[in-house]
Image (tube, rainbow, N blue to C red; front, top):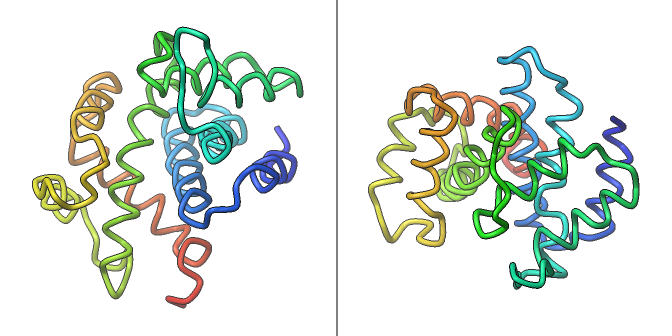
Length: 190
């Protein structure tokens, strides 16, 4: 798996800084889980990086017609020869696709996607971004329904259940992975 090639594909389709940061965040979380499970870090990272690359151009899905996000992105990935394990995981992260999450990679992608959105939103409102952020900080943010209200707490909970890891451990894994990307996510923070 070529990270430069995957990033070039992402950059070709994504111009919104927030979406780019989200994709980078999910990449970091997926790499952390690949290390944890002894899986292919490049494949898992690329899956996280590209899971939403079609969202900006195709935000409205039509599951019956299999169009919109993530269907359009998966068509592109398949045309470019990306592995089926990746495309199935990407389809599975969208509950409306009807694609079951059977692989560990698919379960991790689903568990990390919405949580990365919440953690990224939390970092935006903290002057020190990820410094000092921990599982308790995330739990507190989860309880504030108006904070990052578009982030599905239900999907975060379902993802944790499917992944089968303790909630606090999952929060900690994602925060630590994203903390390692702070320079790339928030270059102004130094």
